[in-house]
Length: 198
Image (cartoon, rainbow, N blue to C red; front, side):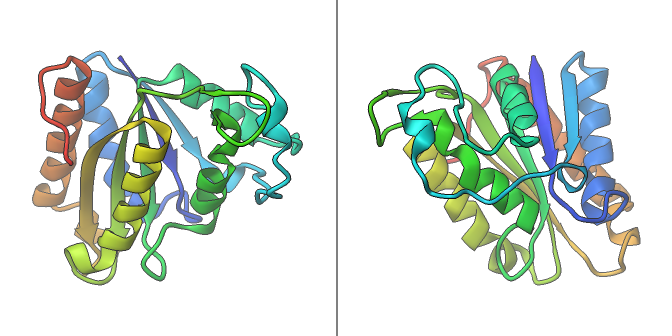
């Protein structure tokens, strides 16, 4: 079982990274192989909407020769992709949005080629936010659900914690146990025993 965590916060030691710690620890204790990528350290250009990738068969094919190729290699390697992000203005961070926009080369829907390179992957969300629960996270979650439908991915759910006391909010036993429980859910789904969110 292989899980890729794309950590989208511009603060690599901030709240989102803190919430990822117990999640990763639970996965690793259960013999899940984890790759953790800090997007802030990567060069990810915005999508040019040039459609060049749509005429490259069997591979990503983007004209931007940047770190998105490394990220795509990890996406293709993984059984499950976790999008870990703070919620800014009801959506994900800028680096995370750039990654999501650059998914185009994985779906060959609009040119001379056909197919979906990442079909069947599982996708989940870990989010940190200032506003309460669903009010903060629903717009981003809806966007990810629609991306999953479009790309034949399996959306498996979201775990989020509200920032009430800065880093301390993400170090409570409740917050950490919630992250561990989400990890256990991911493991069950990877084993084919759990129920994904709709």
